[in-house]
Image 1 (cartoon, rainbow, N blue to C red):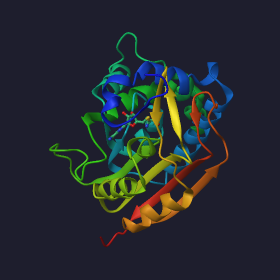
Image 2: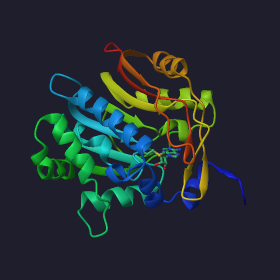
Image 3: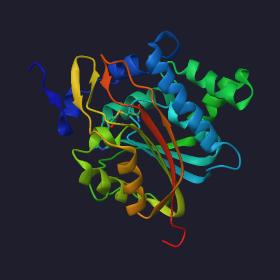
Length: 263
Ligand code: SAH
């Protein structure tokens, strides 16, 4: 149907991982706005997970999608990474890259970019191998459930990472706050929640399918984190927007928060 906005279960039939990658992660060969957004995210992730920053035993990425760029700095700072998404198909796409299967998405421009930030662009293949070793599990999840990981046995983690996912998955601000609370519930006391949000999101395109986006403000994000028992340690705003033909948003927000160590 023309103009229908997809949400919830529609993801299972309408979200095409390859279309998503082509539109938003073509990097060097893609559109300027999408490249700038990816660089904003990679720069912030590099700062967050560099030595002396956020690190530890286990990191779980929630709403991973078909992408791995968000783990390129984190794989240097954690012993183990768990990825999770609502869609099996997205996990399958990420797994293709992790297992170096034929037809896997080529992330090498992003990997090289991160290696350059770290000081040696030539080490990109080592980084790919490290990330491929560090991801130990791929789990399905639903952030709209009180237990997002269902019955999967996962110990309390040092870091929850969730980029550009909750504003796609949650229908309203109450659901967003509840999702933040349940993600904070996965953390050890003193653990970190690292998130990035496309602010004032209205909707976004994946191929010819239009998906719902929840319009969030900076203050709503911070309030949800505080109400879930976290202190916001760092927040970085950028006024960059996606290309209008793909996605309607107003700026991007990157936040690092810490769960109360006494919780
Ligand atoms: N983190 C990736 C993907 C974001 S796209 C990136 O930075 O590009 C939004 C993602 O949210 C999709 O992968 C989609 O499958 C996932 N998603 C949608 N509903 C969800 C839900 N209820 N629980 C968890 N993830 C969900």
